[in-house]
Image (spheres, rainbow, N blue to C red):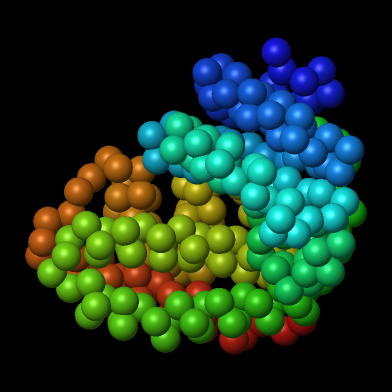
Length: 253
């Protein structure tokens, strides 16, 4: 039976089957660490509405009063089983670690704050401070690192179509998160859904519309690229990264 202290499960945009499995997993977590457990929150696509049972991870933030590696040993096998069964992806943190590290992971904090549901305990995300200067610094760091690494990732994966597809999807997903952070710093209130963020990126930032549509389809598994299409896809991804980078450089905070 689900733990009676669970809440908010009906707010999640997932199937009844996944919801029941999540309740079972959360109940098991509570059983392991109830006295030391501060919060369990779901964030990301299961809240925003982009969740796909076939391809999406179900992201969880699990916060304890205190946490060390020894504390994780008991729950590790449980988390591994659920990762294989339903792609549940918990992030385990102590309350102190979350508070102390929030300013250094502002993009993650932004995404979690804007799309999360607390299903057990305290809402530990709403009280964390979003700092525009720190958000801009992390955004500049992440987009420039992506720009520096993308060509290296391409030549290392060249000829391996599955690896190239994975790189494209992962870098594109990261770019969407960075783009959303950029829109926030520009004073906009961007939506949570991927296709709506991309529409704003095309209209407000000049991102190539064909690239945005192709990558959204690739990420969702609606299309497969032929061998000769990968070079073009990587080139358009590089152009989009360069575009976002240039907008970040022009930000004044």
